Length: 159
Image (cartoon, rainbow, N blue to C red; front, side, top):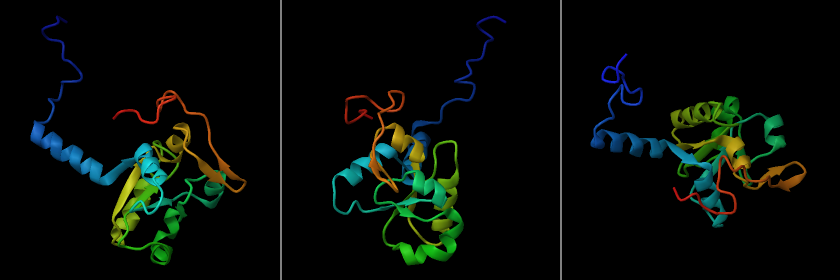
């Protein structure tokens, strides 16, 4: 096959026009937050303007969770959300990590009940890998920053 007939796999489907791309990425940001943005908002102290919701099982919650998060497993959202959450306050859901769609299922359940919601990309896995403090039944802990997921020795990745 000559280079003239070789198809670039990246450009096999052409990029969207800039206006369509902007609309897509704006919409994506309306549905998602990343762990570093959530951590930065929580680190300021006071009311961050949202509540963090851990949608995992009790056993998973006890292994570790974001400090200050509300624990509400997805299966219990329909019956318990109104007793734990205020519909006027946005909710940021998380589950285990990027290989798990539990946070998306929790976000869907909450949205269907009338809550404003975003999913925290990376979940608890990336919270820990980026070196943010987490809680267990024994107290607070912090792991080492994984150099493959966050800048080591810097507070911000610059993105």
